[in-house]
Amino acid sequence: MFKKIFALLLTFLLATNFLSVNAKTKEEKAAEKQANKEFELQQKREKELAKIARRTNILKVEEWANNGDVQAQMILSYAYSTGQRVDRDKKIAKEWQDKVSATNKDLAENFIPLEYFGRKIKLPRLYGLAASRSQIGLYVDQNFDDALRWAELGASEFDTLSFAIIGVAYYTGRGYRQDFKKAIEFLKKASDEPIALNLLSDAYAKGNGVDQDLEKSKFYADYLNSIVQPKIDKQREKNQEKIDKQHEKESKNAKTSADDKKSTDDKKNSADDKKSNDDKKNSTDDKKSTDDKKNSTDDKKSTDDKKNSTDDKKSTDDKNSEKNSEAK
Image (cartoon, rainbow, N blue to C red; front, top):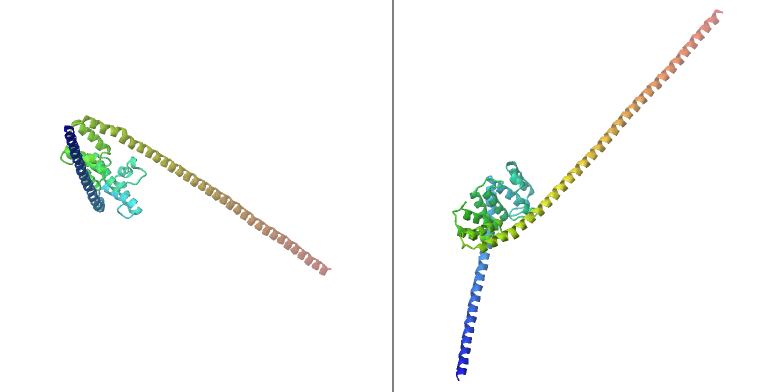
């Protein structure tokens, strides 16, 4: 009897536990479903905001370019060259690039970083690169306000480099008031950018904005040094080889063109020399022909003169003969 009661009680407890676990699973599933729904809704909102930003940001770039911002001028040149946000127009693209070349040749020649060579770059990334140059003073004057102006433009279109630049500004207090927690928030949005990984490692090592965690600090440092940076270095090396081959080909083509031109010039000069010699020969032949004609005329005249002389002599002899006859 006791065993039966115990078995029934055990069964009841197991059933209750099962129902409790099952109910908890349903609650978790409902919470997870709600979280996914909110995440999808957030992504949809972000895409809509990015779409609006794409239309307005290019107008800002154009305004800054007209006001003399050399980075905006180069970005506008690239936009017209690739047909991003504007109608493709090579002529306008060249006009903007020539304007930058006249005032900042270094920026014009190094506008596209080596790791991006040979592929199309989206405008938000160009905004992030402009922010990075302004932040460190590369090819342009160092200006933290300009850096954030460009970073905010890129961040509005979810460019990770732009997020990283904003994170750096909060972390260092250069451009924004120092705020480690906000810095971590933006740096984690750019966790594949070298500068973000470096600062995240530093933050976990020192406990800036996060709980100190040396293992996480090492994780970010190792990920940067063994995965991200080698990948970038490899791409740069590969692209440098492409550039060297391209320069070698251009140099070879230029040499071939110069040799062809020289050969053409030599042929032309040879033809001119031949023509000159022919002209001289023809001139000599003409002179000779003229001399021959003159000599022929002179010979004819001489012959005529001799004939006339003979005729005159004969006439004189005839007259003398007549006189002698009359005298007799």
